[in-house]
Length: 403
Image 1: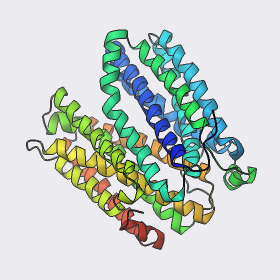
Image 2: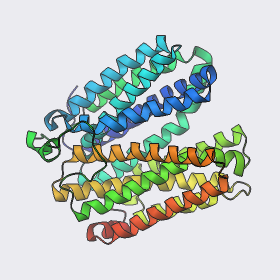
Image 3: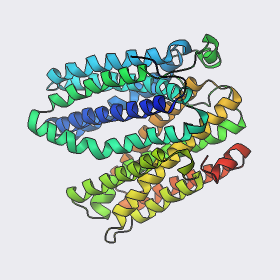
């Protein structure tokens, strides 16, 4: 097999396909674990699974990913996928043991969290700047596409062959992804490229701005943090909203969830039409927010349509904000790998914080309506962060153009 030449469309397609295969496999494993643990051990054990996959990664992932030499970023990502494949295949025989599940969830989530910034470093450095926004949007869309495909395929496979085979399939996806990313060209990196971040001591990385980030970069980073807070808040309230507010049964919930994934699929298709066809950030953000408004209106098909619009808008917005961050980091000379280590860390923090916050609200007897008001406040915070980010000239030009 020959190495793909520098930043070619073929190499960029390999990056997107790798992201899709990785996401498909991750959903298979999540489905296998959460269904099995819920059925065999109850809701308390399911909650413990969530904390096991979040807390160790939040504490240690950024420190570990920062310590990966920039000269071997791609090789380190491939090595992590092989380790994950070996761990996952072992779970096909150990999935009846709850302790083994907890250990697997904690360690595999940590390794995936370490590998995420490495993957985005490869994706950004291996992509032509003119096509970077389209590639990053497609990578986000791949996650939504996997949300449409994985539950159906995984459910059938689990019923026919047993959940052990979901682990086998996931292990295979790690190996396939490793082969594909190995074909992607990445420009040579010097050992000094990450020195400004690698010099920071200590195992636990606090939630601080990446070193070297100036005002032009901090604004998009603030927007990213507000964006992932909104996504985490939505994840925390969506099931109670469908159940108690919209009165959906399990079938209706499944259809609506698929509509969210279908919205991401729409954005994925748009990226195939070329980078000039992507909507500007202001339109993506508006679609996301309008979708959330329609989602909470208990009238006919409006909630499903709202989730479709929210899925498309959030995927477009994710790609646009990532592109803003990558562009500003390149202009400021900020270490990309350390930067995405920070982004990955705040995403984990947002998920844990929002999950804990809304769990406490529901525990104290808060109504779904009250929690939706909190969601609206979080959404307003994201709007404010977008307005602040827009004041910078680089962000302002991307705000109204699909560049």
